[in-house]
Image (cartoon, rainbow, N blue to C red):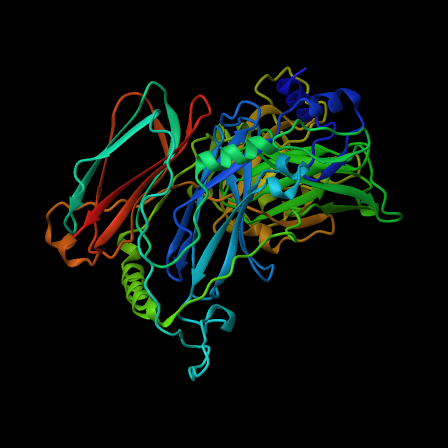
Length: 593
């Protein structure tokens, strides 16, 4: 039995939820015992950042049995946490073939201090916290008072802690490039060692007998003391020593991995005694123009889960019980359960007077760059997946093309073909949609009805909504299976404002904030084409290039980029893993004069 068997078992919804659950099935337990652990390596662009600068990072999820990229987890979690335990950001990252990426802007509200960048997957939460990826990040914010513990204050100093104070000391000397690994797998050379401002650099990169997946960063080497970032081969070497097969007892609670996408889960309980209720149908709507919907059944413990395998822009989801006795039940959504980070070790550092000019100059450059961010912006990439089957409509009605009636009920009757209204057994009006095959019995099946992407289970709730608010109606006459529920057709409506769900309320609706995955981006790459517009725009980039995902083969890849108005030594860093699971950490240096 292998991973495919586990996927089938989880897909059936036996135990898979986004929370800890007890393994009660011996077959599932045996599969769990034979699944290798995962590791998550993170490559950030820098370990020292000033307020006003972006942090970029790429993630590599590794199968610790083969040491190749893992196809198992589809989500990773990345946090930046401060010494005080406060989380600066918590990101959810889509993993595609084991890789993902994200970014975070260091705002002027983030205090100077020592921070930890931490990464893990849901599956990794079954191991020990020290298996998680972690590295030190140092932030300097000259726009806020510097905490006294980060200042070098000597006897006789009269300056206050809101100044950068210290007795003079020697500046940090740029050290030789750190240890490297993987030159037997990747060749990387630049067209020169020295360049002028706004000069074109051409990198020649190719795999030596094998391909791989890498991150490429070109950044000015820091002359301010900073933590050393862990290199890919160091991380791989350390994690191999700790990698063990998972083991679990029959009654052990475990975190189930996110196999096919993002998991949203919770529990349906009795309001009377708080016990879980099995066999209850729960609908999840992610409303909006590109809405998503799913229906799940609770298991014997009352737990439900939804597997969201598509990207979305929503920040709010709507849950509702599809049960005649829903007044006696309650939906309790699960929040993401972060690991315990109490055992973290924090490195101290000090900021001296000798750094004042360096920090001032760099801060001014950052302000100028941010002022021109509008012409140097990154691009958010559109999702590659198509529309789900329940948004494949056969007929569209733009109501401004027809005579307007007072209500949705009248509009459907008078305008929309193959749709009518009848009373159900309880005497309530419901929509009906005629199937394409006129001889096919509807068996009293109801259509799925949506208004601004919200699933409407009680059709009567919207019958009397003014049709003047409705821009478009969509119709599908196919039969649909959603979850285990069967529907005859779909009737979807959009208002002009698209926000009907924001003002619609019923006791059985539960709004849940969504922990939305970070969008995929194509990062800005400066180009100079010799025109006057380029010449007039300042260029104080310290980060000359950031490419989070490079799929490298044995054919040579040519990667061009341009230097900026910043002079000094710049480091070209390529990190990642070959197709055979070997770590690569290669660095080159160029000088801009």
